[in-house]
Image (cartoon, rainbow over all chains, first blue to last red; front, top):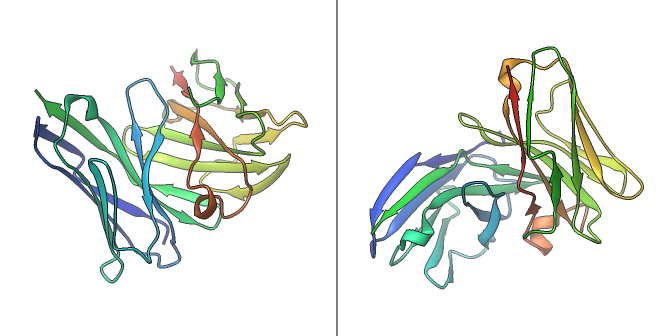
Length: 110
Length: 118
């Protein structure tokens, strides 16, 4: 099973609030979990990534939380800003393949 | 700018036709990946080439084919097009051919080719 399930499909957050996007997977062979950010008209770009031997990784306002036993990981965006409005994809590596979730459209209201 | 160039940016064609999408990877990158992005399917991995050879295959239809040339650019050929093939097609590149993400953690995506089949 190579699926990565992502939720919610869309999210509206007030400026300054916390945006939370969740992903779950089944295949325990996945061993690298990046998040990609995509602005309209652009290709996805790497935002932050984590390996399963780490439970949390923080880069600025962006934090990945990883729960290996539950096979879940999430992206938290602290102090969300209108400039964070984009589509966010979680992903997982399996062999040579990067499997993406369906994406979450985030809108931060000012 | 990711350094990955895709052409054309937009393409409108009819059912049953054939199109070719082109990708130039970042300078020095040996791997090229093709992804299909549709509204209901998200980003679907199609195929990967490394230094001219097919390295991994995903959900690529038999009507679709790809190749990577000696100068490392890649082409994705879509034939007998159907309405459902309408989507954004992304090319991405990376320096390595295997276990890319453990070491580099990143694919560099182009801006995509939007295909509309009428």
